[in-house]
Every structure is written in C-alpha cells, then in structure tokens.
Length: 373
Image (cartoon, rainbow, N blue to C red; front, side):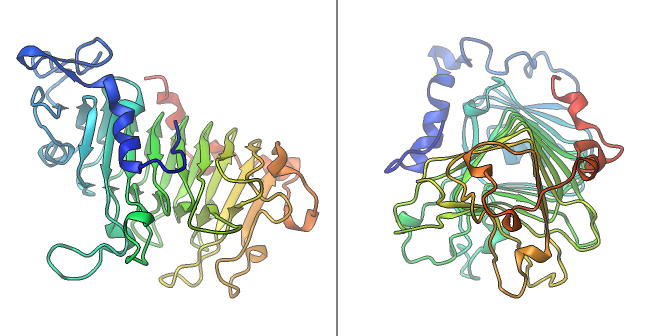
C-alpha cells in the first residue's frame, strides 16, 4: 500500500486502519471479526503481569501508547496494541529495556502510530524548532526493544507547510542495541527511518525483517549497525521538483571505528517516480562526527528502474566523496543494478561477501530466531 500522487499522507495512514477498528453497540470492538487484542489475551485474561493492553476506545489498560510506555516501568514488559490510529508522539527511555510492542491484529496496516512534526516545526513553548531528532513520532532509546506488526509514520507534508525549510520529518528514531522490527511499516518522506545509536562509541545493533519503508530524501539514515532482511523500500513520486534526482534511499553515517554499518540483503527497491530519478545512497558525515566513514552493503537485492544504474551513488558534501566511504554491492538484480560504469558500482568478491551477512553484523544476537513468534 503506497501513497499516490495527490493523496494526503494523513488520509493514507488513516485508511490503513479502515475497517480494522469497528466499535459496536455497548463498546464492543473487533479486529477482523476477532477480539480486539487477537490471540494476545485481554485485561481480563492477561498473558502475564507484565503485559499491558492499549485500546483507543477504552477497552484496554490505556488509551494511548505513551501512557502504556510510562506505566511499563522497568524491564521486560509487553504492550499489546489494538487496531487504531494513535496520533501522538511516543518516547521509550533507556531504562525501559526488553520492551515488546505487538500489533494485536498481526497486520501492520491496522495499528498506526503517527504524528506530524518536522525539523522546522516550532515548539509550542516558543523555544524554537524541533530539529530532526525532535521531529520523531516515536523515539526508542532502550536496549532489547522489539516491535511486530506496527506502522510508524510521520505524515508531515511539504505542500502543507511551504514556510518551513527544515523538511526532515522522522517516523521513528531507534538508538538502542538489539532493536528488532518484524513485519513493520515505516511511512514518511524525508528521514523516515533514523537507525542510530546513543553515542559515537555505542555500536547499536538493529534488525529489520519483512518490513516496508517508504520516503524520498535519505529515508533510511543514521550510524547504527543495521540489518535489513527481506524488506521492501519504496521511493515516492514528487511534484515539487522538475527533475532528477528526487532523493536518496540510504544515508548511513557509520562511525569510523565501527566495522559494520548498514546491510541490506534479499530485499527490493521499487519506485513511484520516473526511471533513474533516485540514487541508491549518499554518505552522511554529520557535523557532530566529521570522522565518520559511512558503510552500506546491498546484496542479493532487486533494484527497480527507479534507481539510477549509471550513477547510483552521489555525495552529500564534496569534502566527503562517496568513493572514500564503505559502499559495496554483491549479486544484485533488476534494471537499477545493471553495471554500465564499473567504477560507479563497487562489487564484493565471493570471499568478501562471506563477511557481510546478518550473523557477522549482529554477532551473538540472533533476532531471526524470533521472527515466527
């Protein structure tokens, strides 16, 4: 499900919930004809004392996700979130470790956490704009976070705010180690998914499996060690630009001391835009870390025609050319993967590719063992 030209992002995310949340007589709720919390129990039949239930109509322990997060003080809690659109910002502090969020219907389109702050949006207290980090709809700083079957979105639109030049609008910023997202969706435009860490010396490991991510400019970015397996990345149409490039899928900012950056494997990149209007990646060397050496490996992934096959990489700054960074590919397919200028498409050898796998990136953490849970 993708945003079409002229459609409102806000209408899009709400439509994703659609018929999933039906409140009947007497306040009874059903998700696809089932109990609102699906197979995950209810406040009356709680899975355990550390499980909390969120329902927008009041049938759970809390009506907002943030209220449930606040109540889940300590470690090892589970939030079961009923179908609905939760228009709020949510912050998970570093103290709330081993927290799990479960979309009750087991369909990410039904549970949407969304807000509409951008970098340049002014704070209500008059203290200035939110900035990129502050724009995030959801922020996760805790280690051991897991989310299944949930949509994280930022529905801020450039067309609605021509007065704002800081157009970064983050759906989620993830900073904790051992953060796993299974069958989730990430919706936004610029800077949709911020896969980062708490500090330059913290090499946070993150795992995204069977997820959908869409956007236009740098919509997967940050310095985490992040594995994207069996994911779908979708580049959006733009009506505010006359020509290419419309944007960039990845913008890693890996710390120079980190031997592992972003790994994309067994995935696909598709586009709503004209052919070759998107770059696969550009390196981000932020002012806070001028020594960064961004790393991205894309392997065994289908690159659609929306990716510029001749020049798939470009610079964010001439001071830090992409050729000096750690960009590589291996056995990709599709029109966007065609090698026409070999110098523009650094390829791994078979021996080199052996060290670019989910296991080598994530070490002693094997989150894929929980994918079917």
